[in-house]
Length: 319
Image 1 (tube, rainbow, N blue to C red):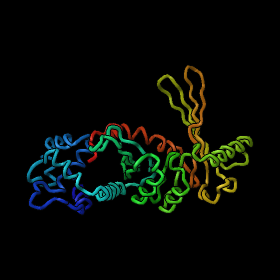
Image 2: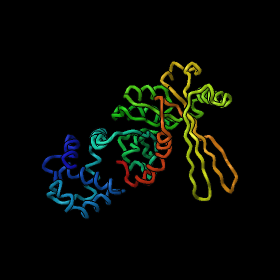
Image 3: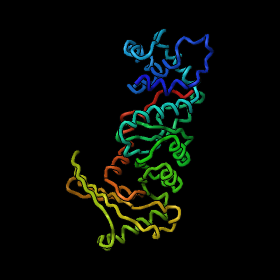
Image 4: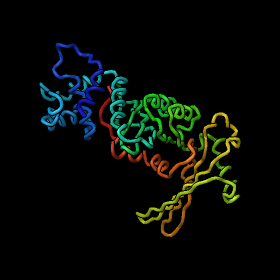
């Protein structure tokens, strides 16, 4: 693990003057990454982790002058080029993830609660993240200025990742034909949520499902999946219907020529024996076949990221 880490992170340029260096940059990077992966939420937490785990960390790197103070850690990391750290981290994570196949990658944007710039304590950090559902790993992140810029940030994030032979899932913000084309260019399939932000396309897909149901699916190539969950005093039945679609039905068929099928997920909830049915999502899909797991993993990405990585309670100020 250490040799792999060093080989990826040793290329980061250390901006400090040589005679002022008390702690090696690779030591600080290794300490910080290990601490954050172990749940550290601030500079003091990183220092505390290093003090508690110094003997363990010396098995991998010398730490000749012990653990740096939290002020030193913050000062050194804030002087590094963010793009360089991002690139090294993504390559390191991908080298680990390549040991097994990355079947589903969920891309989603979030604003980190309690993050801010030190100058005015405003401008919270908003990131677009790529989550490997099978590995439980964040493969890469791209910072954006505000939520409206997710559309431009997603292609930049895709440029950093190797998503070949994977299925990329996106929420409705990513429902842009340019993003779909980028995913195909990278050798992956896509599953994209379709909502009102694509008004005409959304209505045309709804009409396609309406015709299929009216004909009782006799003229349609389709696949179905159903599952039932119980708990908290309710019963919930989810139904997933996938239909092949004729692109000539779409007015923007040229831009969306890659669509092979559309998917509708319905949820029927029974609370106190009173049924409540709603459409959870209409989804566009590029490949010809899919399992309900792809849609489920994409939909479950948000709460999973919030709970495990505590993305809503980041306490480290941005220099």
